[in-house]
Image (tube, rainbow over all chains, first blue to last red; front, side):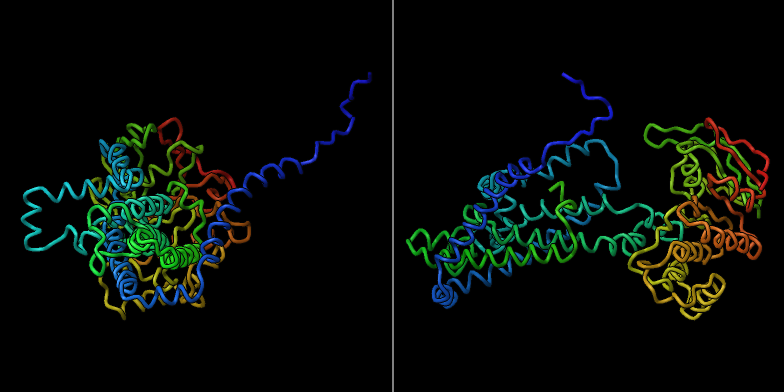
Length: 275
Length: 217
């Protein structure tokens, strides 16, 4: 047998089987995704959608969903921008612990968040507050339940955003005569614009889909605390599958719109890698 | 004159202890040394961007060790220019003056003066995106000079430029010194650059700053 000499040209095997195997594995999941969306779309008809949109309960749920999601998004940004900035700029004892705590709402089962909120509002000071300003089983409880989870996602996004910004422009602003606050408003915040928009859209989408905590903390009363996921649940529980699917499709459309908005901002999955 | 007296700096695990040097007023001083020797850290300490653990920094006789960056009268041009992506060239040149609440007509006057000097007049309404390397560095220099600083700190401002642009910015730097009399502290790796521009060369080696002769061109 002749040994290959160094001059023998080496031909690596074909890459095709490798890509084929990966393609089949990836394709299964993509197919499943497409099939579920397709099933939704084929199950319903324009007539179902139209009828669903005519129902006063569903119209109320759409309005309430839009209102509460927007409020909880604004609240989330209000909190996430300062947290993201401080966590990026400050080094302190217990930072790792705080970092883990900020992720708790992301990993906690949604029902547990609802129950925790319910128990919290049994505390005497908050019960006193509720006598003046009802929260539990009222609209504010929906905003609070959505905020708990949506905010955690906004915080993650803002942390990634501030971590990815070069510190140099802010430092230059400081040498040009700014104090920290002026540098923040004049330089840091405008450069974080895209991140803020991503945080807002993600928070909004999370809030729109929130169900478990709302069911526990706000109840599912028609024309009062009914948001779109509640509608799906209520319609399903009385066997009205057509209406449930029609409302689900509305939420799919909203989710796709959010994804398109994020993509149009040039934000790729890699910029959200720690989400 | 910049006087650095026995300063100690710590950045993570990197530590510079007991560093001293004097940089004459109005000089163009090149600070040279290996990568990772701590040149940028020293520059940042002069700008006020690094907390000094001990020792003093004086600028023209005034102790600035504990002053915030904005009160030191030090212009800073980092390696990549660090322009503000959302501001036009005009807003860059007027930034420090706006922070100082100068009246608008005076800001406009100063911006025009800088723009014609640094040949930026045709770019005033452009955003940084799309400026060439040389243009961006001229904007960064104009922004740092706008408020008449006593000291100009440059962190390898020429390293990312091609040869022609490098020669052009070298001319600008020589011109700046002649016109303003500002004290220039300039980090560079390039001996030719130091020979061309500097009248004082400092070498940071093993945590010590030594004065060395200006290299031959």
